[in-house]
Every structure is written in structure tokens, then in C-alpha cells.
Image (cartoon, rainbow, N blue to C red; front, side, top):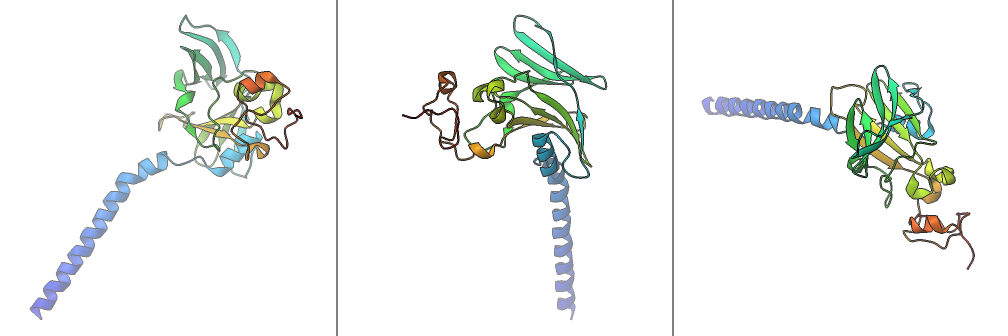
Length: 222
């Protein structure tokens, strides 16, 4: 009888110990998992379309960014737009592009790539035709930048170019670090070949633009 009671006590102690360890692990990893989570689907779709998708989404147009000045010899092409006393925009330093979010620079090259391969962040953010939006869901605010890509024909090839966009999490508050995400989605480019096709426009060919041969209007017959 005494032996049976000891076994039960030891079993209860073991269960309590395992439960406490589980709670400790959950407490340790929950903040990191939450902060590094992917962007919500409705936010992505709203950024992609430029309008609210879902009842909980609110989209605010931040207006066009405007050229300010060339800061110095190391940085130039400073473009900004303002929202409630904070500034958002674009600058190039040492020939590398950066987003400006509340007076701080964030390298475009550091953006988390969420698009289909082989698409990567553009080497430049074109100012013409670029949309700067603030997207709010029930929990957070996001910066959405829909921009033509110089690598994909820019403003000249607008139907394809506007498929490039960036989302910055935590861009309007300081609770957590800003994190950039890059997206490139276009139904006609999902099955593109990673090779330069025979193009009517040689400039685009030289930029190694990826086009679907069966759908592109830029191709010429051999």
C-alpha cells in the first residue's frame, strides 16, 4: 500500500514537472514566433490589389513620394512622403537602394523573399507609378509599396511591373523591429523560363527579363 502511494506521488510530480516545462517553453518561444510570423493573407491581397480585402482591413493612401534632395556624395535620390509626423520613402546610398521608415534606412536587399523564384527585389524603386499605402488589420499596421520594377521593364511594361510589391511589418509603431517582405506575383509569369527569349525590345533582353514565350507580346517569330 505504501509502495503504491509513493508511485502515485512520483507520477503526479512527474506530470506537474512536464507541464511546467511545457509552459516555460511556450513562454520562451511564443514572442519570437509571433514577431517572425508571415504577413496575413488579407494584408497581402490588399497590398496586391491596392484596396481593402476583408472587413477587418483598412487601406490608407499615403500619397506620392516627392524628390527632396541629394543628401551628400554617398547618398542621393531621396524621395519622401509624410504621415502623422513620420517620413517614409526611398534613398540610394553607395549605389544600394534603401527604404526610409521613420528616419531609418532599411536595405531592400535584406527583404524576406516571398515570391516565386527566380524573382528577387529590384535594384531600384521607380518613383513613377509607385503606390505607398498604409494597411491596417485588427492587430497591426503595415506599409505597402507597389512599385514598377526596372528589371522587368519598369513603367513601359506596367502590367507586369506592378506585380512587384513590398510589405513592411511594424512600420508604424516601435513595439517590434521593422521587417521587410518582397513579393512578385503575376499569373502570366508563374511558368516563365529562366532564359532570355528573342525579343523585339533588345533593352529588355539585356536586362534578362523573364517572359512567358506563349503569352508575351514582345516576342518575335524566328
